[in-house]
Image 1 (cartoon, rainbow, N blue to C red):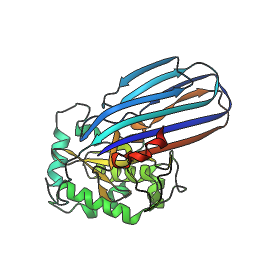
Image 2: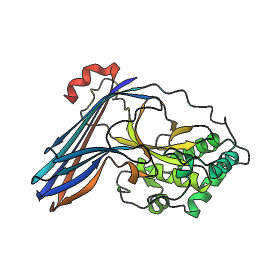
Image 3: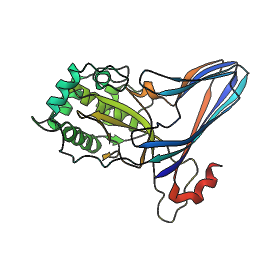
Length: 299
């Protein structure tokens, strides 16, 4: 499937900003079942400097500075991506989770995508006893790593309530877990903490999910959203699981970045000087090739 992606972010400030320094992580990944066909980013006001950097984990970011005073800051990323992933493995297939745990811990691979980097606590994913205890029923002795993770994903979807008002981007994992409610960021962080607590490498994946308008209804401009899910190391490959929707990651998911938690992959972060109050608006469109008539919406 080929997708056109439009991601527009607009900040409006109560007072003029005299200086801004930001990192933009909006370019979809090339690889792992995806082919990036084109990608452009438009920034208003134009930055004084713009440098593309790639961090240790392979995440590409555009580092910009804006030195002209401004009250509005807008970023629009427009990309075209082909997604052709292999089918996910059978839910109970693969290497036993104990063997995956043990081999990941002693691996000497220290490259950016090496499983060992995703075994330990990170800034937004502490290892909590109550979360590890929650995971244990999925990890019967000898069960495959993928089977255990798949079962954990289904339990999280059943036990947690999707509620956009229950949390915000800064809500601690412990609070989201205790409330059994949140958004895709919270679902992913909880699942990652549970997997790492059992000794399995788990990563946070940011990207987009294709949504389908109701039958007979037109696609609404900007109505899609960024999404997050989990990649779990199963001994020979990373496999994507989406606890928000209780499904394996296939061709409806488009990956932008994979890191230890949301802090590694935030679409836009940085600092501004003198903004006062601010308002944020995010618009996202994920348009498959089969709905080419909707391309006018992203023009």
